[in-house]
Image (cartoon, rainbow, N blue to C red; front, side, top):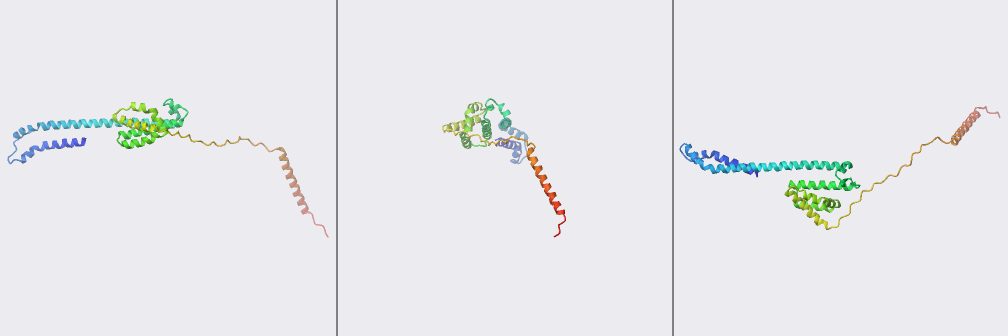
Length: 246
């Protein structure tokens, strides 16, 4: 829109600036600037109209710039909020700082709550940037809100979300989610998935240091070695004796 207004203003100014030259081409005698000045008074209305167009163009550009600046601030704040949520999802200490619910004994439910919150914030950003249609939003919302964690999340935050909406489009976004929630609410919810079971490794037997071998076993080993040595010496002596004559 702002481009169209700028082109209209530029074209009108160009026509006004070159209008005396056009009048000169329509007559054979030299230009009478006094007469042209009298004719130029008839352009007073056109000048006023051009001034109005210029003011409208400036106003439109200022409104668009203000909207872009507001959108950029909101995106920055949501990005910061997303970073804080990610830190809380990874560390139980940071998660407990968000309130009583996030210091409970069910860490899986806490992380699921935060993750669904991130999903809906992403939808809201896409909705405000007109990157998602209403039909698409209803489709994905019906899938997430039909799940046990999505239904539990929206049941807990729906009033707060709808009350804190800051604009007409954001209120429309939450109304769509709530309509899908009311439609799915009549269907019995599926049970929450059980926590993944962790297999415990069998405990290792206690370490028992090995002591010195029993005294009896050592004595038997020494006795067997002595017998073997004596048998070896006897065999060598018998080999060294001279043989008897026939």
